[in-house]
Image 1 (cartoon, rainbow, N blue to C red):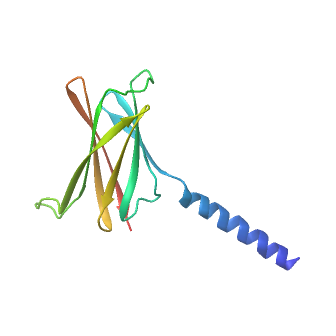
Image 2 (image 1 turned 30 degrees about the vertical axis):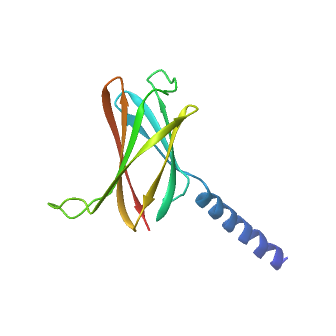
Length: 132
């Protein structure tokens, strides 16, 4: 009975922990009038390559497939100094979503600026995460 209790306890602790880390990192926000959902394949985002999948919808919920999507990611520096690292990549549109890859070169705080350009207007969604 004691072995069964230990087994059940381990299963109840390990499986939820595994599922929590196995899921994607998801951020939802707005870029102007557009609703944006960003999914990163690593949760939490980690040093090295991370795949981003971006879904953009208009105010009625219809998928936006005619936008330009640029992802700028930077590591902020001390106040009064420019950022230490700043990178940019374009996301490619494919079947109702946009995909790209970012390379997070070191641990620390990263700021993401997702720029959506549509009909001559550029709107930005910002979010931050920590790489450990």
